[in-house]
Length: 166
Image (cartoon, rainbow, N blue to C red; front, side, top):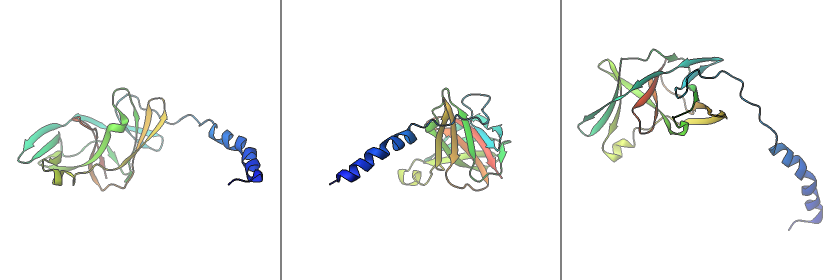
């Protein structure tokens, strides 16, 4: 049970607490992507456009493979936890998934087994999505990634945005 003195203290503190929650947030004033619906790698104050491609779907015995031409992406980053900026018009940022690709026969691929148990082994890298303002979003890998080829892709789409971590 609250005493009168405690209640009076809460009433006195209420305006300060309400004032803090109503404080305006500062508008984002950093670099902005030139093109909508293409993730850009953020390197300090510079933006680097990711390699945009369409992955070809191949059905193999008990697996589906998504293939991108070329052994490596020309877009490179040294960051183990890459950060992207996306100006969203058509792509839903919350649908983006980050996958590691393997290089085989001079091309990059991601293999998804048809077997439900094995499919659970293929997991996207965890990402954090932050709305900066309007339709501008920041997407960050929420875990360190190894050196290699990667693809940021909208779930359920063959559209891929590739880059390399070196």
